[in-house]
Image (cartoon, rainbow, N blue to C red; front, top):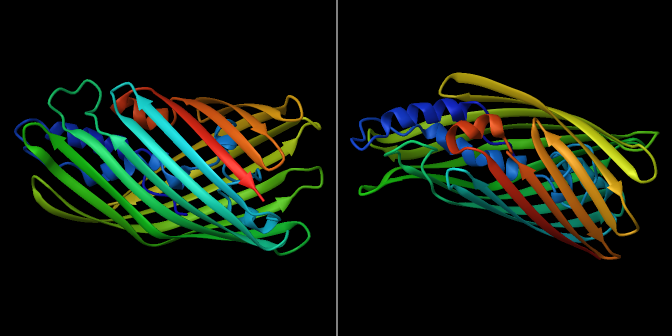
Length: 334
């Protein structure tokens, strides 16, 4: 699973697009707008449980994990189905569906997780911009995660995305489609490492690097671009007592597009409290975005819910306004 183009490139690209996307269609729609959907897609996806804790990626073991090293801890088969819906003030709606299956290759020693992801949108123009085109996205991915123990305290893992498709459309009545871009990833990977702490919990690291080819057209003619991105995330989790788990994580993103290099960084943190044998409550913060969650678990299955307010707000609010995200997930273990 590979991190896609995102961060502050999106805001800059949209400013260029809006300046040129009036009814006369005098200029191009910037292809960097393809990056927007990745802020909510597989590259940033974590489990619903961890979304309620601020979106932790690296250091909490959960069904549907984002750190591939956790595949080394698998002792049971499990399947996960997740649904996410994000609604923006401007009217844009993003709908994500994710399914995964985990397979222990050697119980508690090494394992494999296969994840499929689909993101669709109901297109909308940017907030408060009269005459701007409605922008929509369609993305689907397949990711493979392998992990194993390499010592009594360390695990390592690798993730690959053999299938990745992303398309971005610009539609302006009465012209219809005025621009279209498609991106495919030709090389990239995700690496993960975990250290099991003596006091309980984990120290985790995730590193992504990839390259993407973009093709398409806008009013100026055919377009072809090369994109690359790099991410590192480091986190630590620790039980505060038998009923409370806490985690904090730092992430740095670097994106290069058309010889322009930009970066972004931020912290995530969250806490989870076991209320009784079956019910769990969660609170979190994702670089300023508030999140909360609730979970119910039984012998072989779990149900999770998370709410996130203004996810990726620094990058998204200038374009589509504030947002509310609802996420639900069901897991079966056998």
